[in-house]
Length: 214
Image (cartoon, rainbow, N blue to C red; front, side):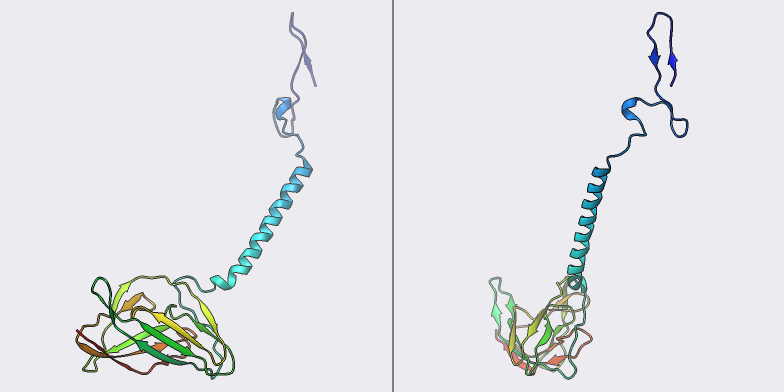
């Protein structure tokens, strides 16, 4: 510390200089001020608790995000397990004059153990197959790109689940497909259901003969 004096002026003190790391600084902005340890410890504790909370949330959500939206996925299927499927159809004309074929897919678990089955709206789980009066396969038409949420449900032993649908639309690995059927023609329609996903066993319904009247 030095004291400098000039003629006719009171002595003035110069700011301390740290030769090791810095130049002269004002007393209110000294770089050697020690941070409050109690405050730093409290902030560290809050940050740690937040990180632990986020990790717990991610761990809880992991089973949900195992199958991303829009992706197909397989689920466990017991060896030798089976389901019985039945197709029920009807024909209606909507308010715009468009033909619709709503119906029900009835899924029955004939076994003694509960089964985990996939939602028919999952990708590659349900498909409809349509034959025209000459026995030719009717080609489905691409309707849209969709990203269905992946979901499953439990089907208890010897119980039945009914999946209702408004159209013969189904979701493949590339998008939503459906059929444009003509009035005045008869068709044979069947469905294939894969309760464990695309790589699991498929179960088909019997053909349903269906005539669409004018």
